[in-house]
Length: 363
Image (tube, rainbow, N blue to C red; front, side):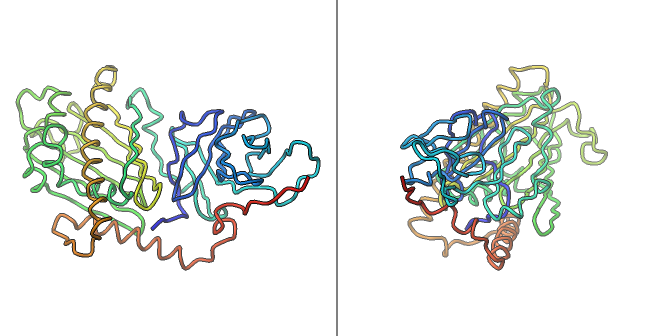
C-alpha cells in the first residue's frame, strides 16, 4: 500500500552526482543525476524510450543522460533530445520525469500526480543546515521489511527497554510507566513521553556526566504521514524544571530525522541523521553519538526484518493489539485514510503508466 501523492526521501544530496544513481521507490525503477550545466537534480524512469535499457547503465552528458545501449539521450524533463544517426526525433520519444526537490540535505521525490507536487508540503528540518548548533552525520540502512513496520517501531517506544537495553533504552519499566501526551490531526501525530526521576540509559551517561544523579527524561516524536518522524530526546538532572518550566539545557540532547521510503511492499530505505545537541564543539562526541544510535537502529532493523519474514510466512490476521499499540494504531489509520482518499481521485495518465511505453525508433 503506497501513498503516491506525497514527498519521499530518495537520497542524501551528497549521493547524487554527475553519475547515474539508480533507486527503486514505491516499486518504480528511477534514475537520479545532476544536470552538468545547472547542478540541479533530475529523476527519470530508469528505462530508455528506445529499447527499454536501464538509463542508469548510461552516462551523464551535457544534454542529459545518455543510454549506454545505443546512445539515445534524454534531458532532465525526460524528453529524447538526441538519437545517433537520426535527425528527426519522434514526439513520443520520452520517459517519465518525477518532481524532485533538494532541501535540508535530502533529495525529495513526488511519486504521484505531478500537478499536485507542492514543495510547501515537504517537512521542514532546518537542523540539518545548522552544523554549528546541531553537528550530525548521515545514516542509511536498507531494510528488508515494509516501511510501515519501521514506522510502527519508531512510534511505539515501549520496546526501547527490551531491544536497546545496553544503548538508548535502559530499564524497561521506565518506558512502560512513562507519562505521555498525544496530539493529532488528519495527517500528523505527535507525542511527548516523560520519564521523571529515572536512571539515565548507557548512551546518555557515556555522553554526559550526570554525577550519579537520576534524570528527568523526555522523548518528543512528531509523525508526518506517511513516513517521516522528527525526534527530540534528552535528559537533565531531576528537579531542574525540564517539564515544569521547559528548562532543558545543560544535559543530554539529540535530534534525529527518521525518513522511511518504501522500495517495494516488503522493503524500504531508512534515512536517519543523529544531531549532537550537548557537546557541539567536540567532533568526537558527534562520532560517538552516531555510533551508538546506528548500533541501536541496527537492533531495530533485525527485529523489523524478523517480523516481516514471519508475516510473509503466516500473515498478520491472527496478531493482537495491546495497550502500548494505541499510537501505532492511530498512525496506521492516518496512512490508510490517505491511501483510500487517493484511490478515489482520478489518476492522470502520466502517473498511472509509471513510465512511457517503449517505442521503436525508425531509422
